[in-house]
Image 1 (cartoon, helix red, strand yellow):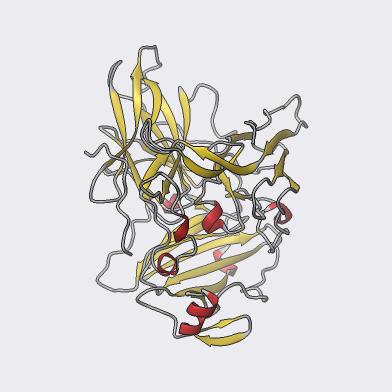
Image 2 (spheres, rainbow, N blue to C red):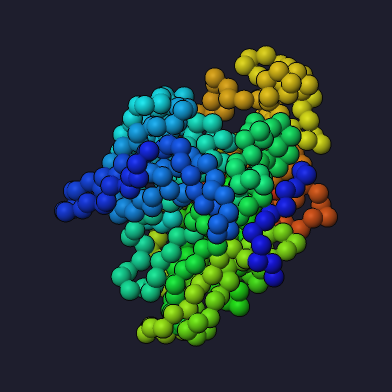
Length: 454
């Protein structure tokens, strides 16, 4: 097992904490202030160079925003970056005007200006926040944080509750971010901008204190631009209890851990084995080598010593799609390296693939459309069920996120007959907001269009 922190790159102001949560009665508002700006972070080994980053409130990840299900939230964002920005509250079924998509749901926040987001989270669970303007750069520079909505478990159900925010950074040997690769057409045409240094909670090695026989909750969030990660707890087999913030019946993880695509979240329950002084490794297993990412450090202490299967987390109220009256649609993904576009429609004109790439930096298409169209892909009536077939005709995996909704995954099948379908055991029992569609795969999802907006 490697203790080094390096992923192999595939060829393919003053300190300011978030304002504390303030709840005095049932109608009180949770107030936070989030300030994106330039700063530094220690992402490498001790005594190594610091990295120039962009951060929320001078920390990477940004401050954990912890709120209550069904209680109003007010978050003021003060932009001290050199670029316009927004914040998207990923996975929260939110009023469309608060969704944070630049030039679609709001104008981006100019440098030196502010914007107040107000919403009431309808779901308890693990969510996160990040920019939605030049995301490919702003996210990679360190702008992201966790958003925890409480209300899915009872007090004392777990001895500890930890959030683990995973990211891969593309750094140079001097420890600085590899800025020259921002906007790289090679990355954009392949699997995306992969990093070479792994951090958990912005640290080269995360260390979390536990006590033997404790039952702990680990909330994993993958904030990387493009890398699908897989995490395991050495010599332990945790239970999966939630996917993308939505509870599932407790399911044991596989021996090599649990896979988490970019933007996805997985909540695990771990019954800690060992004794005081033990260091239990958190390992990343997506590659050929197991990378040590952090440790659970066993300390002296007393615990309840639970041995039973964990209880189900309290379910959120999400409308079930009505498949008997669903509108059937297809989203065909095309383009990218090895399947370059012959042509696609861009801003109302059919343009050949070479011109699209060289003059417009357009390498991909949805249903033959490159870039964002003025016309929507479809319009749905309030309460209508949409059954969407996602067809990946490219050579690369794609994580697809539906804003403002959670969906059921109905089916997956490989385009090539000799390939075996993906196991739907965990997915079939949960609503999700992000799905990873593999190359040459067809996945079918369904959701009720019950949150109006774009």
